[in-house]
Image (cartoon, rainbow, N blue to C red; front, top):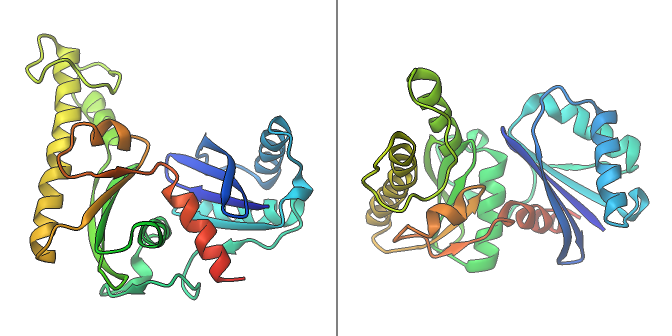
Length: 254
């Protein structure tokens, strides 16, 4: 079986695959100071609760945007699973032609998402990933990774609002009943939800103009489903897009 690990700034996603089918997946908080033993025992317990064993895993692929965790993740893989992990980075086969000015700058998560989306849906397409940052990635009909957009994410935007405005509270990120809020909390919820919907639709429409067509828009990440329900441009939500990309890339590099 195959273990996919996607390390973001806020969360770590792990998924177990048997051939092409995902069996189980988990979302954990990211801690930069986690040791290989902490990670190994944590994953061991997750597997045990799913009636799986460490020795069932014979391949691992890791995508990470948190460099301080890479050593611990690699050590965990070799110490607990006896597997040398595939690390997504320069030199790894992806099937994508990255045509940005500096391909090495493109985050591993963005490449993995693009690989999964292009293999699943074809091109041209735009992938919107609602993570710590909200990223927009453009892929051509031929599978060229063209570049994209990086904007502040929903969570950090709301946290900044709370920290910098003394009278504003932390609020739950849910859709309010109406745009015009009648109190502080509903007003903040309206600003976050409809503000980000407007941001997504506005950026996507500007990207469409540069394509001279309207590529399919795929959304992934923690807030994808919430924003997609209000969006006029998002057509598909796939919360496991990154894990699927890791599986595809792993097979390419066997």
